Figure 1: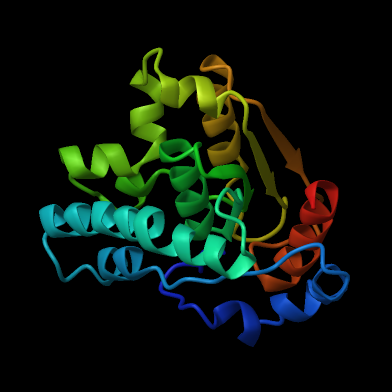
Figure 2: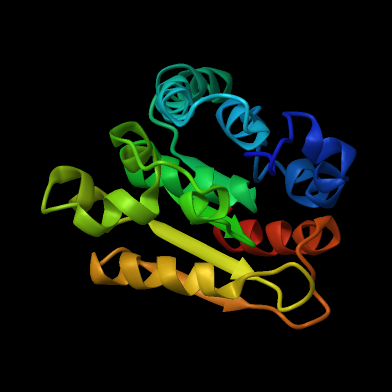
Length: 213
C-alpha cells in the first residue's frame, strides 16, 4: 500500500483504512504492508532539483523490488508470493509504476483516484530517470519484451468517483495506453457522491480486494 501525496506508512491506519479492511484481514484473506513514499514527498516539496527527484524515484523503485518484496515474501513464508500494489492519488501512480516495471513479482494494481501525469501537475522536467519512473511515459514506447509479455498476464483496476477534486480523465488516458499494449485493465467510475478523499477509498479498496483475495 502506497500513501497519498506527502503521506507516510502509518497514514492508512490514521485514516481508518486498516479498520475498513478488517473483515478481509481477520478472515486471513490478505496481509497489508505499507511503505512511506519518500521520493514523492521530496518531489512535492519542490525544494530539490528535478534531476535529484527523478534519481530518487528510481532509488525508491529499487528499494521496493530488492528490499520490500523479499521482506513480504519472508513474512508470508512464501518465496514466490505475488504482491498486489494499491494506492490513492499519487499512491495510484506508484502502484501502477511498480506493477508495470516489475510484473514478475506484482500481480495486480488497484489504483484509486489516480494521479499519473506528474510532469503536467508539477511542471516537471522529464529526465531519463523520471521517464522510466512514470508509466504514462515509458509504457507508451515499451516494445515487445519479456516484461510486456508478463505484464499482459497481470491486471490493473482503475477507479474514481465523480465528486470533488477528482480527475477521471487521467484514468481513461492511462487505460488507453494499457489497452494499446494489450495489458488487461478496467476503469470503473463511481458516482458524484464519491469525492477524492478517504471516505471514498475506505469503501473502494475492500470492494476490489474482495474480488481478488
